[in-house]
Image 1 (tube, rainbow, N blue to C red):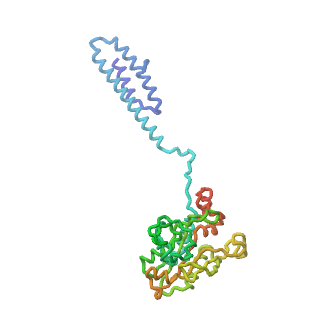
Image 2 (image 1 turned 180 degrees about the horizontal axis):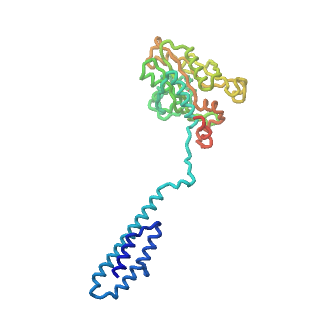
Image 3 (image 1 turned 90 degrees about the horizontal axis):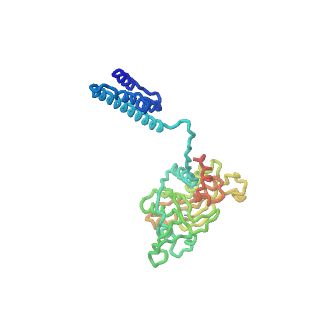
Length: 346
Ligand code: PHE
Protein backbone atom coordinates (compact mmCIF):
# COMPACT_ATOMS: atom_id res chain seq x y z
CA UNK A 1 0.00 0.00 0.00
CA UNK A 2 2.84 2.35 0.87
CA UNK A 3 4.28 1.78 -2.56
CA UNK A 4 0.97 2.57 -4.22
CA UNK A 5 0.68 5.82 -2.25
CA UNK A 6 4.20 6.85 -3.23
CA UNK A 7 3.59 5.92 -6.86
CA UNK A 8 0.36 7.99 -7.00
CA UNK A 9 2.03 10.94 -5.27
CA UNK A 10 4.82 10.89 -7.83
CA UNK A 11 2.34 10.74 -10.72
CA UNK A 12 0.38 13.67 -9.28
CA UNK A 13 3.54 15.70 -8.92
CA UNK A 14 4.73 14.87 -12.42
CA UNK A 15 1.36 15.51 -14.05
CA UNK A 16 1.84 18.23 -16.68
CA UNK A 17 -1.19 18.59 -18.98
CA UNK A 18 -0.72 19.74 -22.55
CA UNK A 19 -4.33 20.85 -22.89
CA UNK A 20 -6.87 22.12 -20.37
CA UNK A 21 -9.17 19.14 -21.04
CA UNK A 22 -6.55 16.76 -19.65
CA UNK A 23 -6.91 18.23 -16.16
CA UNK A 24 -10.51 17.07 -15.72
CA UNK A 25 -9.63 13.69 -17.24
CA UNK A 26 -6.86 13.32 -14.69
CA UNK A 27 -9.18 14.25 -11.82
CA UNK A 28 -11.69 11.58 -12.85
CA UNK A 29 -8.89 9.05 -13.26
CA UNK A 30 -7.66 9.73 -9.75
CA UNK A 31 -10.63 10.84 -7.70
CA UNK A 32 -13.70 9.82 -9.74
CA UNK A 33 -15.96 6.94 -8.59
CA UNK A 34 -13.65 4.42 -10.21
CA UNK A 35 -10.54 6.50 -9.68
CA UNK A 36 -7.27 5.15 -8.37
CA UNK A 37 -7.26 7.14 -5.14
CA UNK A 38 -10.93 6.20 -4.57
CA UNK A 39 -9.91 2.54 -4.98
CA UNK A 40 -7.17 3.10 -2.43
CA UNK A 41 -9.84 4.13 0.09
CA UNK A 42 -11.56 0.77 -0.47
CA UNK A 43 -8.28 -1.00 0.14
CA UNK A 44 -7.76 1.05 3.30
CA UNK A 45 -10.76 -0.69 4.88
CA UNK A 46 -8.79 -3.93 5.08
CA UNK A 47 -5.68 -2.36 6.61
CA UNK A 48 -4.70 -3.74 10.01
CA UNK A 49 -6.19 -1.59 12.81
CA UNK A 50 -2.78 -0.62 14.27
CA UNK A 51 -1.71 0.77 10.85
CA UNK A 52 -4.96 2.59 10.12
CA UNK A 53 -3.93 5.89 11.70
CA UNK A 54 -0.65 6.11 9.78
CA UNK A 55 -2.15 5.10 6.41
CA UNK A 56 -5.20 7.24 6.95
CA UNK A 57 -2.98 10.31 7.31
CA UNK A 58 -0.94 9.41 4.25
CA UNK A 59 -3.97 8.83 2.06
CA UNK A 60 -5.48 12.14 3.25
CA UNK A 61 -2.26 13.95 2.43
CA UNK A 62 -2.30 12.32 -1.04
CA UNK A 63 -5.92 13.44 -1.60
CA UNK A 64 -5.15 17.00 -0.53
CA UNK A 65 -2.04 17.24 -2.68
CA UNK A 66 -3.99 15.91 -5.67
CA UNK A 67 -6.88 18.35 -5.17
CA UNK A 68 -4.55 21.31 -4.68
CA UNK A 69 -2.64 20.44 -7.84
CA UNK A 70 -5.81 20.03 -9.91
CA UNK A 71 -7.27 23.33 -8.66
CA UNK A 72 -4.06 25.21 -9.34
CA UNK A 73 -3.88 23.79 -12.86
CA UNK A 74 -7.52 24.70 -13.55
CA UNK A 75 -7.02 28.29 -12.37
CA UNK A 76 -3.96 28.62 -14.54
CA UNK A 77 -5.88 27.34 -17.57
CA UNK A 78 -8.77 29.75 -16.98
CA UNK A 79 -6.38 32.73 -16.73
CA UNK A 80 -4.80 31.68 -20.00
CA UNK A 81 -8.18 31.58 -21.75
CA UNK A 82 -8.93 35.09 -20.51
CA UNK A 83 -5.60 36.32 -21.81
CA UNK A 84 -6.25 34.77 -25.21
CA UNK A 85 -9.64 36.47 -25.48
CA UNK A 86 -7.92 39.80 -24.91
CA UNK A 87 -5.60 39.34 -27.87
CA UNK A 88 -7.38 40.52 -31.03
CA UNK A 89 -8.17 37.83 -33.51
CA UNK A 90 -6.04 39.06 -36.37
CA UNK A 91 -8.03 37.20 -38.98
CA UNK A 92 -11.33 38.80 -37.97
CA UNK A 93 -12.79 41.10 -40.67
CA UNK A 94 -12.16 44.75 -39.76
CA UNK A 95 -14.95 47.10 -38.70
CA UNK A 96 -13.98 50.31 -40.45
CA UNK A 97 -14.78 53.55 -38.60
CA UNK A 98 -16.72 56.05 -40.70
CA UNK A 99 -14.51 59.13 -40.89
CA UNK A 100 -16.10 62.55 -40.88
CA UNK A 101 -15.04 65.20 -43.37
CA UNK A 102 -14.66 68.93 -43.18
CA UNK A 103 -17.73 70.90 -44.20
CA UNK A 104 -17.36 72.69 -47.58
CA UNK A 105 -18.15 76.01 -45.88
CA UNK A 106 -15.27 75.47 -43.46
CA UNK A 107 -12.96 74.47 -46.32
CA UNK A 108 -13.70 77.67 -48.25
CA UNK A 109 -13.68 79.86 -45.14
CA UNK A 110 -10.26 78.53 -44.14
CA UNK A 111 -8.92 79.02 -47.64
CA UNK A 112 -10.13 82.64 -47.80
CA UNK A 113 -8.71 83.38 -44.34
CA UNK A 114 -5.39 81.87 -45.38
CA UNK A 115 -5.17 84.00 -48.53
CA UNK A 116 -5.73 87.20 -46.55
CA UNK A 117 -3.38 86.15 -43.78
CA UNK A 118 -0.67 86.01 -46.47
CA UNK A 119 -1.44 89.71 -47.07
CA UNK A 120 -0.92 90.43 -43.37
CA UNK A 121 -4.53 90.31 -42.16
CA UNK A 122 -5.33 88.87 -38.74
CA UNK A 123 -8.63 87.21 -37.87
CA UNK A 124 -11.08 89.06 -35.61
CA UNK A 125 -14.14 87.64 -33.89
CA UNK A 126 -17.30 89.11 -32.34
CA UNK A 127 -20.72 88.19 -30.94
CA UNK A 128 -23.63 86.98 -33.07
CA UNK A 129 -26.12 88.77 -30.80
CA UNK A 130 -25.36 92.44 -31.28
CA UNK A 131 -26.77 95.88 -30.60
CA UNK A 132 -27.96 98.44 -33.10
CA UNK A 133 -24.87 100.58 -32.65
CA UNK A 134 -22.37 97.95 -33.82
CA UNK A 135 -24.49 96.70 -36.71
CA UNK A 136 -26.03 99.96 -37.97
CA UNK A 137 -25.50 103.30 -36.19
CA UNK A 138 -21.73 103.51 -36.20
CA UNK A 139 -21.69 102.27 -39.78
CA UNK A 140 -23.40 105.44 -40.94
CA UNK A 141 -26.99 104.16 -40.97
CA UNK A 142 -28.87 107.15 -39.43
CA UNK A 143 -32.09 106.18 -37.54
CA UNK A 144 -34.50 106.76 -40.41
CA UNK A 145 -32.09 106.00 -43.21
CA UNK A 146 -33.79 103.93 -45.90
CA UNK A 147 -30.60 101.87 -46.20
CA UNK A 148 -31.70 100.04 -43.05
CA UNK A 149 -34.32 98.43 -45.21
CA UNK A 150 -31.51 96.73 -47.09
CA UNK A 151 -31.13 94.39 -44.12
CA UNK A 152 -34.09 92.37 -43.02
CA UNK A 153 -33.17 92.01 -39.41
CA UNK A 154 -34.14 89.59 -36.62
CA UNK A 155 -34.73 91.87 -33.63
CA UNK A 156 -34.51 90.30 -30.18
CA UNK A 157 -35.19 93.07 -27.69
CA UNK A 158 -36.13 96.73 -27.66
CA UNK A 159 -34.42 98.61 -24.85
CA UNK A 160 -35.25 102.25 -25.69
CA UNK A 161 -38.45 103.83 -27.01
CA UNK A 162 -36.48 105.89 -29.48
CA UNK A 163 -36.35 104.28 -32.89
CA UNK A 164 -33.35 102.00 -33.45
CA UNK A 165 -31.55 102.97 -30.27
CA UNK A 166 -29.94 100.10 -28.35
CA UNK A 167 -32.05 97.48 -30.05
CA UNK A 168 -30.68 93.99 -29.50
CA UNK A 169 -30.58 91.95 -32.68
CA UNK A 170 -28.87 89.13 -34.57
CA UNK A 171 -26.07 90.64 -36.63
CA UNK A 172 -26.92 90.93 -40.32
CA UNK A 173 -23.29 91.30 -41.38
CA UNK A 174 -19.90 90.83 -39.75
CA UNK A 175 -19.17 94.54 -40.25
CA UNK A 176 -20.05 94.69 -36.55
CA UNK A 177 -16.72 92.98 -35.83
CA UNK A 178 -14.95 95.71 -37.79
CA UNK A 179 -16.64 98.32 -35.60
CA UNK A 180 -15.48 96.45 -32.49
CA UNK A 181 -11.96 96.30 -33.87
CA UNK A 182 -11.92 100.07 -34.50
CA UNK A 183 -13.15 100.61 -30.93
CA UNK A 184 -10.22 98.74 -29.45
CA UNK A 185 -7.40 99.20 -31.89
CA UNK A 186 -5.55 102.18 -33.31
CA UNK A 187 -4.59 102.15 -37.02
CA UNK A 188 -2.91 100.49 -38.81
CA UNK A 189 -5.75 97.98 -38.76
CA UNK A 190 -5.81 94.95 -41.03
CA UNK A 191 -8.41 92.38 -40.01
CA UNK A 192 -10.70 89.88 -41.58
CA UNK A 193 -13.91 88.91 -39.86
CA UNK A 194 -15.46 85.54 -40.59
CA UNK A 195 -18.73 84.58 -38.94
CA UNK A 196 -22.38 83.58 -39.12
CA UNK A 197 -24.92 86.25 -39.99
CA UNK A 198 -28.71 86.29 -39.86
CA UNK A 199 -31.29 87.86 -42.15
CA UNK A 200 -35.02 87.48 -42.20
CA UNK A 201 -35.17 85.97 -45.67
CA UNK A 202 -37.31 83.24 -47.15
CA UNK A 203 -35.25 80.07 -47.60
CA UNK A 204 -34.68 79.13 -51.23
CA UNK A 205 -31.96 77.61 -53.43
CA UNK A 206 -30.13 80.96 -53.38
CA UNK A 207 -30.96 82.47 -49.97
CA UNK A 208 -31.03 81.35 -46.35
CA UNK A 209 -31.80 83.10 -43.08
CA UNK A 210 -28.41 82.00 -41.69
CA UNK A 211 -25.24 82.18 -43.73
CA UNK A 212 -21.53 82.88 -43.41
CA UNK A 213 -19.70 86.04 -44.28
CA UNK A 214 -16.10 87.12 -44.42
CA UNK A 215 -15.50 90.83 -44.26
CA UNK A 216 -12.21 92.67 -44.32
CA UNK A 217 -11.03 96.07 -43.11
CA UNK A 218 -7.78 97.85 -43.83
CA UNK A 219 -7.04 101.26 -42.31
CA UNK A 220 -3.74 103.11 -42.48
CA UNK A 221 -2.26 106.31 -43.82
CA UNK A 222 -2.63 106.79 -47.60
CA UNK A 223 -4.74 103.70 -48.30
CA UNK A 224 -6.19 104.16 -51.78
CA UNK A 225 -8.78 102.61 -54.06
CA UNK A 226 -5.88 101.20 -56.10
CA UNK A 227 -4.76 99.25 -52.99
CA UNK A 228 -8.27 97.85 -52.65
CA UNK A 229 -8.40 96.81 -56.28
CA UNK A 230 -4.98 95.14 -56.24
CA UNK A 231 -5.71 93.29 -52.97
CA UNK A 232 -8.96 91.91 -54.38
CA UNK A 233 -7.31 90.93 -57.67
CA UNK A 234 -4.66 88.99 -55.74
CA UNK A 235 -7.40 87.35 -53.67
CA UNK A 236 -9.44 86.36 -56.75
CA UNK A 237 -6.41 84.84 -58.49
CA UNK A 238 -5.42 82.88 -55.39
CA UNK A 239 -8.95 81.54 -54.91
CA UNK A 240 -10.10 80.90 -58.49
CA UNK A 241 -6.82 80.54 -60.40
CA UNK A 242 -4.08 82.63 -61.99
CA UNK A 243 -6.13 83.48 -65.13
CA UNK A 244 -8.95 85.05 -63.11
CA UNK A 245 -9.79 88.68 -63.80
CA UNK A 246 -11.94 91.07 -61.80
CA UNK A 247 -14.16 93.99 -62.70
CA UNK A 248 -15.73 96.60 -60.43
CA UNK A 249 -19.18 98.08 -60.82
CA UNK A 250 -20.33 101.19 -58.91
CA UNK A 251 -22.65 100.36 -56.03
CA UNK A 252 -23.93 101.77 -52.75
CA UNK A 253 -23.34 100.89 -49.10
CA UNK A 254 -23.92 103.39 -46.27
CA UNK A 255 -20.50 102.65 -44.76
CA UNK A 256 -18.32 103.00 -47.86
CA UNK A 257 -17.83 105.81 -50.37
CA UNK A 258 -17.22 105.15 -53.18
CA UNK A 259 -18.63 101.62 -53.16
CA UNK A 260 -18.39 98.83 -55.69
CA UNK A 261 -19.55 95.31 -56.47
CA UNK A 262 -16.78 93.02 -57.61
CA UNK A 263 -17.22 90.34 -60.27
CA UNK A 264 -14.71 87.64 -61.18
CA UNK A 265 -14.39 86.18 -64.64
CA UNK A 266 -16.41 82.95 -64.76
CA UNK A 267 -14.03 80.09 -64.00
CA UNK A 268 -16.31 77.55 -65.65
CA UNK A 269 -16.49 79.00 -69.18
CA UNK A 270 -13.39 81.20 -68.96
CA UNK A 271 -15.49 84.29 -69.70
CA UNK A 272 -17.23 83.05 -72.86
CA UNK A 273 -20.63 82.83 -71.18
CA UNK A 274 -22.38 79.78 -69.71
CA UNK A 275 -25.52 78.97 -67.67
CA UNK A 276 -23.69 79.56 -64.34
CA UNK A 277 -22.67 83.12 -65.26
CA UNK A 278 -25.98 83.51 -67.16
CA UNK A 279 -24.10 84.14 -70.38
CA UNK A 280 -22.30 87.23 -69.07
CA UNK A 281 -18.86 85.67 -68.41
CA UNK A 282 -18.82 87.32 -64.96
CA UNK A 283 -19.79 86.19 -61.44
CA UNK A 284 -20.53 88.61 -58.62
CA UNK A 285 -18.58 87.68 -55.48
CA UNK A 286 -18.34 90.63 -53.11
CA UNK A 287 -19.11 94.20 -52.11
CA UNK A 288 -16.45 96.72 -51.18
CA UNK A 289 -15.47 100.37 -50.98
CA UNK A 290 -13.44 103.04 -49.26
CA UNK A 291 -14.49 103.40 -45.61
CA UNK A 292 -16.82 106.41 -45.34
CA UNK A 293 -15.18 109.24 -43.33
CA UNK A 294 -18.32 109.31 -41.14
CA UNK A 295 -17.62 105.71 -40.10
CA UNK A 296 -14.03 106.55 -39.19
CA UNK A 297 -15.17 109.57 -37.15
CA UNK A 298 -17.93 107.58 -35.40
CA UNK A 299 -15.30 105.10 -34.29
CA UNK A 300 -12.69 107.59 -33.08
CA UNK A 301 -10.38 107.57 -36.10
CA UNK A 302 -9.40 110.87 -37.72
CA UNK A 303 -10.37 110.75 -41.42
CA UNK A 304 -7.88 113.53 -42.19
CA UNK A 305 -5.05 111.30 -41.06
CA UNK A 306 -6.26 107.87 -42.04
CA UNK A 307 -8.16 106.23 -44.85
CA UNK A 308 -9.15 102.65 -45.46
CA UNK A 309 -11.09 100.13 -47.44
CA UNK A 310 -13.55 97.39 -46.53
CA UNK A 311 -15.01 94.43 -48.34
CA UNK A 312 -17.48 91.67 -47.58
CA UNK A 313 -18.51 88.39 -49.16
CA UNK A 314 -20.84 85.45 -48.58
CA UNK A 315 -18.99 82.17 -48.03
CA UNK A 316 -21.89 80.02 -49.30
CA UNK A 317 -21.94 81.91 -52.59
CA UNK A 318 -18.19 81.54 -53.12
CA UNK A 319 -18.36 77.83 -52.21
CA UNK A 320 -21.21 77.41 -54.73
CA UNK A 321 -19.12 78.98 -57.47
CA UNK A 322 -15.98 77.09 -56.53
CA UNK A 323 -17.61 73.65 -56.23
CA UNK A 324 -20.48 74.08 -58.71
CA UNK A 325 -23.16 73.56 -56.02
CA UNK A 326 -26.53 74.73 -57.35
CA UNK A 327 -28.66 74.71 -54.19
CA UNK A 328 -27.51 76.62 -51.12
CA UNK A 329 -29.78 74.58 -48.83
CA UNK A 330 -27.50 71.53 -49.28
CA UNK A 331 -24.94 73.21 -47.00
CA UNK A 332 -27.38 73.11 -44.10
CA UNK A 333 -28.72 69.57 -44.48
CA UNK A 334 -25.46 67.82 -43.58
CA UNK A 335 -26.28 64.78 -45.71
CA UNK A 336 -23.09 62.71 -45.57
CA UNK A 337 -23.45 61.76 -49.24
CA UNK A 338 -23.11 65.46 -50.06
CA UNK A 339 -20.38 66.16 -47.52
CA UNK A 340 -18.18 63.22 -48.56
CA UNK A 341 -17.86 64.71 -52.03
CA UNK A 342 -15.51 67.28 -50.51
CA UNK A 343 -13.15 64.78 -48.85
CA UNK A 344 -10.54 65.13 -51.58
CA UNK A 345 -10.56 68.94 -51.44
CA UNK A 346 -9.01 69.02 -47.96
N1 PHE B 1 -21.58 94.51 -45.13
C1 PHE B 1 -21.93 94.31 -46.52
C2 PHE B 1 -23.02 93.26 -46.61
O1 PHE B 1 -23.30 92.61 -45.64
C3 PHE B 1 -20.76 93.88 -47.32
C4 PHE B 1 -19.74 94.94 -47.44
C5 PHE B 1 -18.71 95.02 -46.51
C6 PHE B 1 -19.79 95.89 -48.46
C7 PHE B 1 -17.76 96.02 -46.61
C8 PHE B 1 -18.84 96.86 -48.56
C9 PHE B 1 -17.85 96.93 -47.65
O2 PHE B 1 -23.63 93.09 -47.63
